[in-house]
Amino acid sequence: MSHCLNPDCSKSQNPDDVKFCLNCGTKLLLKDRYRATKPLGRGGCSRTFEALDQDRLNHPCVIKLFMMPPDQDRKATELFNQEAVRLYELGKHDQIPEFYAHFEQDNRLYLVQEFLDGQTLLDELENRTAPGGTLYQESDIRDILTNLLPVLNFIHEQGVIHRDIKPANIIRRRSDGKLILIDFGVAKQATFKTLAEQGTMIGTVGYAPAEQLQFGEAYPASDLYALGATCIHLLTGIHPFNLYNSLEGCWLWKESLPQYTKISPQLKEILDKLIQVLVKDRYQAVYEVLKDLNYSDLPSVSRPVPRQFDVPLESEKGIDYTRLRDLLVAKDWQEADRETRQKMLEVMGQQQRGYLDNEDIEKFPCKDLRTIDRLWLHYSDKRFGFSVQKQIWIAEGGKPGVYNLAVYEKFGDRVGWRVNDSWKLYSELTFLSTAAPGYLPLGLSIGWGEGAINLVGVEGAVEVDCLFSRVEICDTKSGSGTSLF
Image 1 (cartoon, rainbow, N blue to C red):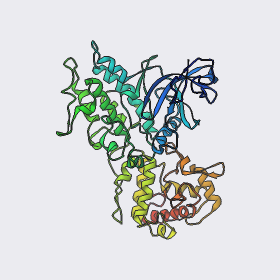
Image 2: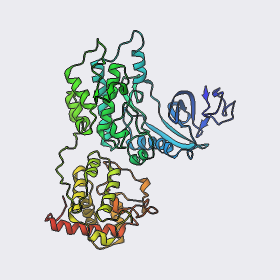
Image 3: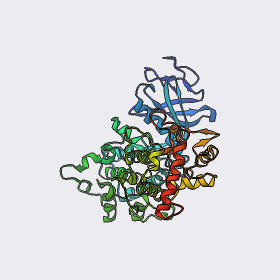
C-alpha cells in the first residue's frame, strides 16, 4: 500500500500502482522516488512513515514529515531542519540513523533517513510493565550503558550534544540487539541559548537536567544526566519526574525499586553520580563512567578534558570569563565564539556600538587578550586561538599590522573561511572539533553590525590584521616571543 502524506487527507491508504492519492489528489511519490507505506508514529510537530526508495530497488527508509508549513512556526522549523544538519555532519556511525535526504515539497519539509527495524526502549518498558512482565535488572542496565556510552562519546567528540535522550529515542535493533540513538532534532549547534529565550522547550521534562530546561545550557554532562534518568526509569517503571522529591531535594529511585530487583553498590553509585542536580557533581565525560563500569574497551574511548582550570581568568577590566571557559570545556565552539565576541566588546565598553575599530584593538588590554587566547588554546589542544591564527598569517607571508589582501585571502583559504575563492557566510559554517587549525575564534572576523554579521572575512579584514599586531605586542610583553600560551 501507498500512504498519502497530506496531513488533512481523511483516507490516506492507496494501492501501490497509483501515482496520486485517490481521495485528495496529492502526489504520492516524494521527489519521484520515496513512497510512504505506513505510519510509524508522531511527536510534536512531526510524523514519521516507513517508506521505500524506488531509486534504490525499493530499499527501506523512513520519511519524517514536518506538519506545519515552513513559514508558520520559525522556531519549530529551525529545530526540524537542524536534525538533518546534525545527521549529515555526524557522518556514518553504526548506532546513529544514516542521513539520506532533506528537502521541501508542496510547502512541506521532509527528512529521509535509514529505516531501523526494532523497538524503542519505551515500547520494551511497556511490555515489561504489563502483567507477567519483569522490569530491567542490573545486567540489563549495564548492557544499556556500555552499549550507548560509546555512541555518546562519538557525538561529543564531534562537538554535538544530543539533548533529548530518553527511552523513546533509543531503538533496539532487531537484527543484532544494538541500541540506536535517534531524533537529533534538538541536538547542539543551533543557537541553543536563543531558542531557550524564545520559549522553545529543549529536551524532555524528567530526563533533561535543570541547566538545560531552565537556563538554556547543555554540556556532555547533560546527556549523561538524561541517560542516568533513563536508567532509573527502566529499573523502577516510574517516570523520573515522579522519582525526584523537590521539597527535600533528593531522588527516591532506590526506594522505588521492585522487591525482586537487586542493584550492586557500585551501580547505585554510578547512577547516583549520573543524575546529580549540579553539573559539577556529575560525571563530566563518557570516559569517566565507562572507567567506573570497568569497561573492557576503555582505551578506544577519548579521555575527558582535564577539569582543573589551570588557565588564570585574569582581566584588567574586571571581566568574568567563567562562561567562556565552561563553553570551551564543553567544546561548544559556536557559543564560545559568540561569547568571545561579546567579552571583547565588553572589555572596550563597545556593547552598544557592536564592533571594535582599529583604535580599540590597539588599546586592547594584554591581560584580557592573553586570557581569551589561552582559554581557546588550552581547551582546543592548541588547534584554535588568536596565536594560532597569527602564526598561520606569518606562514602565508604576512606581517602583523601590515594589511595584505593576497595574504589575507591565502589565510582565509588555509583556515577554512574561504572556499573556491569565495568567503563563506556565517550560516554556512560548522563548528566541529575537526575544523582546520585557526578556524576559530571568528569573533573579529565576521562583519560588524547586525546587517553585516553573516559574512565571514571580508568586513573584518583590517581588524584581523590589527589584531595580529596586538597579539604580537602582547607576546613580546609577556616574554613568550611566539605564542600567548
